[in-house]
Length: 130
Image 1 (cartoon, helix red, strand yellow):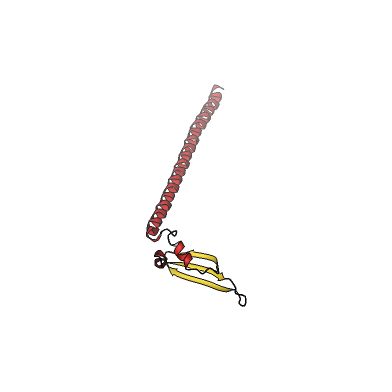
Image 2: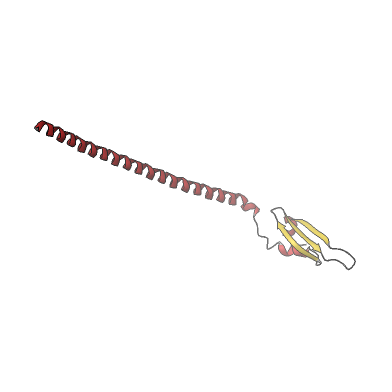
C-alpha cells in the first residue's frame, strides 16, 4: 500500500512541477509578446515623426522655390486702381505671379445694358507709375 501512495505522490509532484514550468513558459511568452508590441509602437511613433519631418521639409522647400515669385501687392495696387474706369463695379481681382486680372461690370448708361469689363495687366506694368 505504501507503493501505491508513493505513486500518487510522484504523480502529484510531477503535475505540480509541470504546472510551474508551464506557467513560467506562459509568463515568458507574454513578456515577449509585450516587448514586441512595445517595439512595434515605438517604430510606429518614429515613422510618424519621420513623416511629419518629411512633410515639413517639403513645405519649406516649396516656400523656398516660390519665394522669388512672391512679392507684395500693396505698392502695385494704387497703380492698378487708377487704370480701372470709375464706372466699373469690380467683382473679382486675381493676382498671379505674372499678371493682374480684374473682372467686373460697367455701370449701365441710360440707353445701354450692363457690359462686362475685364482687364489684364502684366505685373511689370503695374510696378511702375504711368
